Length: 48
Image (cartoon, rainbow, N blue to C red; front, side):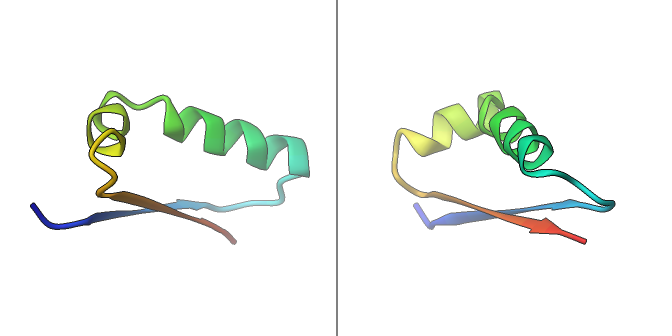
C-alpha cells in the first residue's frame, strides 16, 4: 500500500488555539484513524 498524504487548508486569521482545534478535529477523522495505524498517512496543515 502507498503512503497517503492529506492536505488540510484553512483560510482566515487563526490564533494558536484555533489552529490546535482545527488540527485536533482533523485527527479525529475515522479515515485518519484507520490509515494512521498503518503508518501510511501524512497530514499537512496549511493556513492562509
